[in-house]
Length: 268
Image (cartoon, rainbow, N blue to C red; front, side):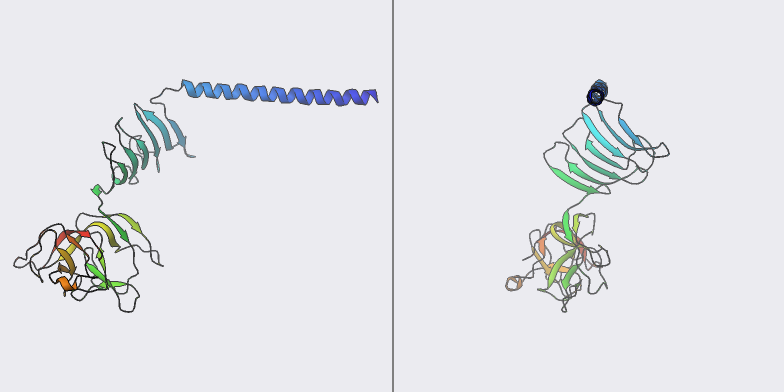
């Protein structure tokens, strides 16, 4: 009986000792790792993750007052990642850059201005100007960016507007001129997202002088020409038909029956 007790006590003491040694070793290991991290310089020496081929696919680090996370499709260059998230050049600016697969071209930027007081979005180097929504399409004939569209009579989707002061107008197709949608929401059952309708912000719209020359500030409505807007000259027909407010003037010239002008989206 005594031998059994001594054996059990020995096992308990051994287990306790092993646990104490394991904890002590763990503390030593953690202390060493913390010391290593603390000793790492504030600049340079980024943490680099590699793929099975040994090529860098991610970098985490800091340079001067900037911090960054870079992701690569493959190792092109340390200065040409496909995605960058961080603060840059020690300025009050930062955001998310998305580049092409070689890192040579910025496809999009989401972030702040250089002063850090405002934010903006750029796509392919161009500042985007509107928010757009994808609608189902009832008739795609003649649809191009900048066109005025209206809901089809059967309610199956949008199509070119076809009459003046059309109360069924839904807006203007985004993407004309140098403007691109800053945010595109929605998709169709087939997954397509083309021809979104601008629902807020600035957009280029096709216009003509059917109701006279357009001045800055004029309210715009659909004209009798499919997909083209005109000045809303009849105040009695504006309710429910206005698509926006002109931000540029337009006067018809010989040989140019229509043009593109900037418009502030208004649905009223």
